[in-house]
Figure (tube, helix red, strand yellow):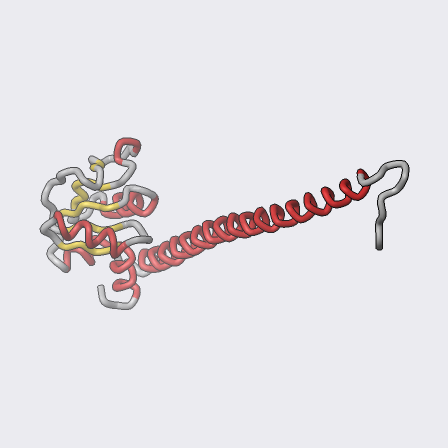
Length: 179
């Protein structure tokens, strides 16, 4: 298409077309940039929910194994006492920690305290300390968190002189007959 200035409007129509083309180009570039950001945000959100799904799947598998052990009459207390552990601290006072406190209640293993990042907000039958607070000496600390276990274990080993074991390892050992 070829456009020429006309007698009535002169170059104004051509200038309007030129301006529209420039704005369209800017709009397309802006749209492409926003689309990249939208994809980035979508990917971040997808990763967030994917990680959450894996976390809940891990909870489900660990709880399933734990209930299977209870059905077989195998207990955490027996596992710990066989290893000479009579007093424990828990790292993680959330769902898994609360269930472990309940299971060990009335057994030969005393839960002395819990350690949790949300220490000031948790109501529990045992004292709950923050991760950097001094804690009483125990025979072992059981990590009840199911993620970042190696990082938690490394941090605890730097400041504590006791055995450190994850709840997941205890359950796996018992489930595989190493209890």
